[in-house]
Length: 373
Image (tube, rainbow, N blue to C red; front, side, top):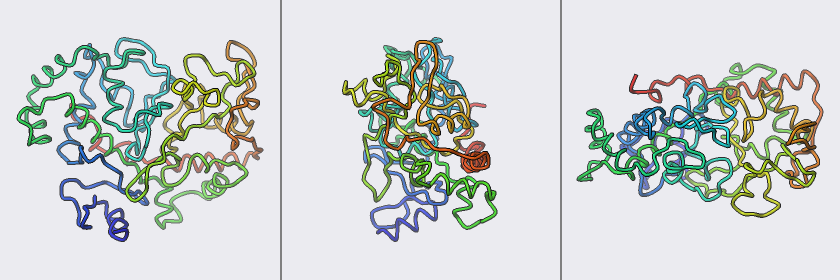
């Protein structure tokens, strides 16, 4: 079975229990990408993915019909929005930076710090119906949403094809299932670095090759939290059990000298109440990281070069204002955030490596684009 899975990954096909390709869906896997795990009650099909793509880009999925999922997850920005904090359909600002959806199929938890959201189907409910802050603003409008979708002629075939066994496929559950299938299809594995790993030595520059070695060195410690094919430590896929509950404090704040973070953004601590969880957030994937600025959970670091400054210092120092403090002295900071020194050439090399993770095919693939245009 392991051999079958390995061959399947290489060919870009999903696998059945007997090792034969699943004709219902073909995974667009890149170099080294394994087959994602999929919930038993929501198997992948091309029809559900296509319905989910339409829903993802449909402004009917906001209360006032002004925004869609894509408003905060733009393809050309690796499905982020380029803003420090996202703005919901009513103009309310969120507390967090929009995370990339690239390779979200491999994630084991969702959002920056919620340890309770363990599948995409459940996570969908937060942007759709959450109210603190309001994102898409559909709370209390579930029936109105379904009627809106019924009224769009294009959905008549899409819902029927995606859920052929349902007498009435227009349900909220089917909306979230289709959206989850589309998001699981957002696979990025064709960056220059991937092509380099696949055997093309000229796919990345000599500078990027040196940067790869630095990234993977004990000097910088990056690889501990940004590990493996997805440069992320909390992942799951076929043949590997999920690794849940991995969150990190990077010394971004220390506003009271005791490890404090801004009151409305304390990370895992919001759910556990444990002092040691103050400021702990999930490590995002580094794939396409060069196009997903600004950075950190609150978008408070503008450039990749400044991100390197933060880690080189072992934590950020803020000299004045309400968030003033020495992050390097945060008592809850990860042991891997120790600081380091880089020459100008080494800094350029690390940045060249990070830029080599940009997958231009993913950012422009028409199969992932807005079908309403």
